[in-house]
Length: 398
Ligand SMILES: Nc1ncnc2c1ncn2[C@@H]1O[C@H](COP(=O)(O)OP(=O)(O)OP(=O)(O)O)[C@@H](O)[C@H]1O
Ligand SMILES: [Mg+2]
Image (tube, rainbow, N blue to C red; front, side, top):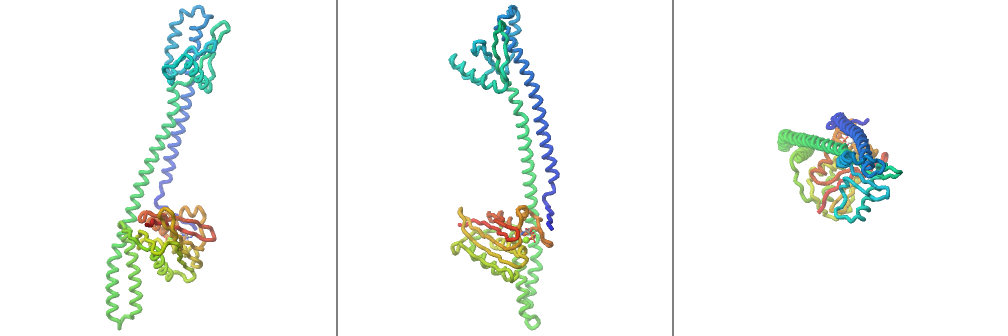
């Protein structure tokens, strides 16, 4: 049975609500501006129609009284200060233009004609030209395009959406970083406190061991030895907790040696039906910056999981190789039950466990030790259901 009491992820509902709101505001403003743009476009078209008519009056022959009206038509033509428009007379010449902002200065008349022709081709893509009735069967054309104001409005909802998304992202990042800082404090505080509390009974236990040794008649020496080993083991655990609770110091260590020594130690403590082997393609004496105590904890967590996955029977192989970019890899391969892809993505989340008595903290801790304290990487290199799994630790080498 899978269990996952993901302590840190209870805010999913809130996240969904915020995201939905963002979507709602975004689509709402998109739809609204779309309507607005359509209406403004209609108005601009009506306006250009008026403009075309005015040109017809001004240049046409069929309006004998046009002269009286020129002050009106003139005003209409002058009043267009925003909509780019080009008038093409019946001979096909580009006879007048307004609001063509990007026209370079100092063009010769031929160049101007060429430039305006190009413009009309562009304008045509959006609106067909309006016909200007000049009378006597003569017709001119007015090309136009949306005013720059209208074009700017079209960008508005996208700008709004971008700003909202950026704000949402910022809020999320600051929220999750403060949450991470809190997690950190909990981790570190708990580790320190545990180490501190274990200190007193341990010194007392050591004193008891000394006392037992001083009286071999009453206390069997071999029992005293066993107790001492356990006390030493407790000391290691306390030292691990204490070093994870403070900034651990890294030291140059012979990685081949550290891994071999520690696996020897582990091999004695796991099922004899697990065949453990260590191989290395690293040069002898390869130095790596590590905190031995914490690094051993990582190996222990991964190996323990491997033994669990094999139900105590199988092969557990550790292999060390050099990688490019000044890195070494320690691969830990088991012949256990393996994991599915979905399962693989969760193994490093705190609280994720498939075990009856698991806390789901072993790999979280291991990843933290490798990545935050050693500036390395820890990941599932590959895993196949029913076949086995390989975890890879990557560390920096000299
Ligand atoms: N080698 C492996 N093969 C298959 N599954 C694995 C392996 N290593 C880890 N897992 C899966 O990842 C889960 C999380 O491992 P993790 O070590 O974090 O927690 P745990 O072992 O369940 O509990 P504990 O906190 O006691 O270590 C395990 O419950 C198991 O389902
Ligand atoms: Mg574990």
